[in-house]
Image 1 (cartoon, rainbow, N blue to C red):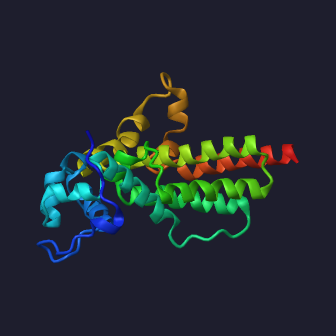
Image 2 (spheres, helix red, strand yellow):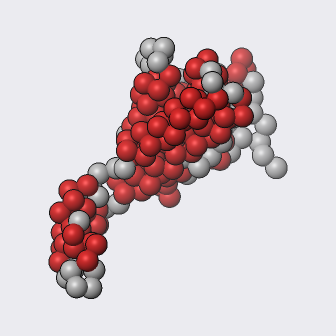
Image 3 (cartoon, rainbow, N blue to C red):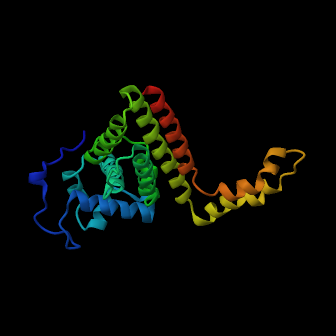
Length: 234
């Protein structure tokens, strides 16, 4: 049975941790992000997190029902960081493009955390604020509600899917990631034209492009499609 989370007004730790900091949800999430960066997903446990914070692991359950709830809070933090300081400019396409790139970048700044959270629905405040913002941009631009929801669905799933894909690559050991990137020159570029004519014809282009994320291109394709749908609905 999950432990009962203590209400915010009652859960503040009166004494600082061994590191001299007052325990808070924000501090726990920030420390968890650091641990994920240093040790990966398997290294994030209540015991290790308690040691890093200088508190008994049981103290964490005053803030989160369990480690899964903490995982959702980490995902919400990444969305919040993407929204921080962003302001809509009033041009729906530019606003969505900027927001998509910010979401993607926020996850890539913490690839180990992205691998854990990109597929989750947190239901927390900052995720909800992001969803409200995206839907608001689309509906204000004149998209009918069924089209707005379809574009929103594709937009957010695309951003998170590419974030998960690109984060998984960044989370690889440097040696493995370098070997993958070199494969386009060491293997694909050497395939003979008589057996692989299309790869051979585009080998230089593949080598130049395939080590970069395709997200900006895919995002523009999605926005092109959305713009056509908006024109058809007016």
